[in-house]
Image (cartoon, rainbow, N blue to C red; front, top):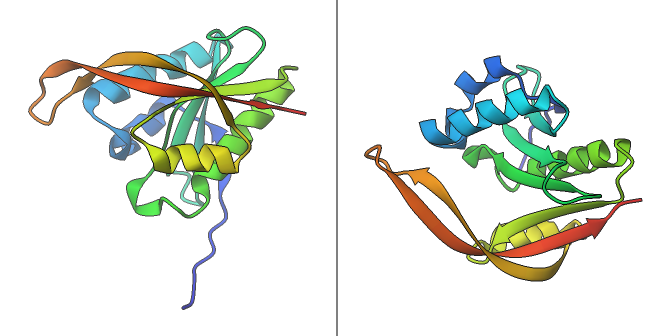
Amino acid sequence: MPGVLVDLSVRDLRPSDLEWCSWSGTALHLTRVAHEVERARTGAVDYLAVCPPSDLPVAIGGVDYEVCPGAGTLWQLTVHPALRSCGIGSLLIRAAEQRIIARGLDRAELKVEENNPRARALYERLGYTAYGREPDAWDEETPDGVIQRYETVCAVMRKPLP
């Protein structure tokens, strides 16, 4: 079967990108992403976008440098649903790891919901190992616009970086 090759680049997510990122979540989620893009201006986080030549994000995710001392914590990693399993998530994670290394830190950390084995398999394939589990919770928006508390249990994973 013939394939299509597309050059991808990774750059900082910009406020103007958010209108193109509705595929990544609800309005509440995008409000949170906008807040994190603002935090990036202070250096507390990096928020990345993977883009094809159109320069419109097809994957986004952040690295928070304030959650765990000595590490960059990856979070809010997502790839456009139509483009999953194409290697874009791996590209995003490797770019995030390079940002962590550039800050002189020697490990990456992340949490993955225990009910998300597909994501966990990706992280393990990229060298992350679980070292604990913990409850987590956040507000989420239902399809009818109601905000409710979502509670889950996550595996906590880390990867040493060169």
